[in-house]
Image 1 (cartoon, one colour):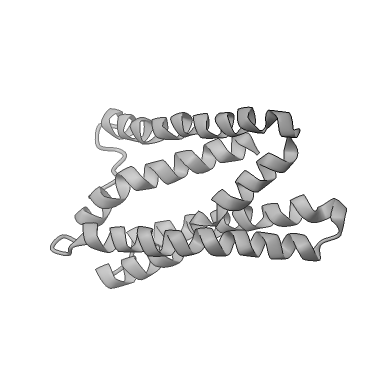
Image 2: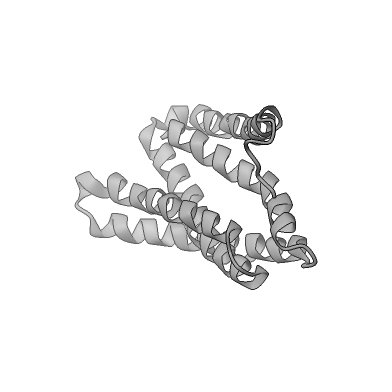
Length: 165
């Protein structure tokens, strides 16, 4: 669970750092900052709420021994569906299509945080929940290094790897 969290933080922070430069390069002349901020705020918020509700709904319907697995389906599925939507958004033929794809991407991508936190809290004894949450939060450091690594890889590629045209 913690390894998946580190990967999810890395992906999310990398997208957060590189989204605006990529969108600006692909859709110059559009107010990409405002459009992206609206997508992140609205669809990220809705995703977090719906993700928790969906995970709880699946868990209630599952047999007791499968409830954690049922709850984990929501963040796993959301991440798997979000990745190709992100790629499609960067390759979109127009700014409007890109924003629509990003809205869909955020709607499925941000559903992970509630169910994952709940699973983590259920997986450890009550006396260890603070330490477990601390480890979870410390993984943001790992995730925060990912955009730096991507930038370093682009810089070292001698033009062979471009994030923006």
